[in-house]
Image (cartoon, rainbow, N blue to C red; front, side):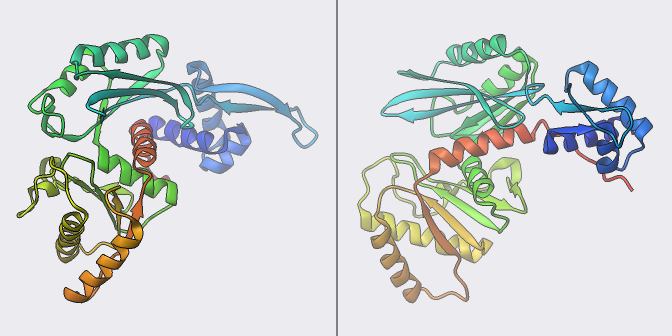
Length: 324
């Protein structure tokens, strides 16, 4: 019960930043005596700071407390292909989603030791890091990277090894799941959405977003649309007509099975006007009772980074229990 009460005080303080004990008691519906004890503990931990004193209806001035958003930090690290090389990005973020540091490194090929050295360096500079969020172009099952666009990662147990080495919880998310999460967070979306990502020279991926959560499926394998039948060789150069036809067939399949409200498509292979005209013609040739709204986005990287930060910080949030 004490931990539940502590977490409720934490959540209120994160939301409003500063408060007096009576204000906290009113907002958490806890007694002033209980709040006094909880605030004392959080202050001793360094999670709350003493702030200004304010007038208190003619009585003794009341002490205001401020939440310390740097009490727990997240390290968000991801890798991506960049012109035939590997880019590794590491960002330290606080509980207010403020970026405290960001470094990027480009190396010819992925090296696990270099990846771990970046993590070790970040933790040395920011000992308050409590979680590591890792974004990869692939899926992890029981600590093993089962599917990845980077062949050197496939079959690797790197995630499990990192968790053991640094003794910190690890959140792993693939790029398209993080991107559609970031899109929904940025747009304030609460609908049933699919995100489709068509990277150059790699197979596409999909994320399913429903009721504020990503649906992962059996062993996290939902969204691996590259395994749909009659897919082209995504590693080859693809003409616009082939891309449009393949994408339309994918959308029709997904709509028949999942019937989302909206599909967000990240691609740079075809212009919006050409796509819109082709998609409208396709719907006339292949009528269905209902089609989703299709949104073309060019914000994949922005959404991916925002989503990965949000998911990493969300993993630090305790499960709250409603008090009645």
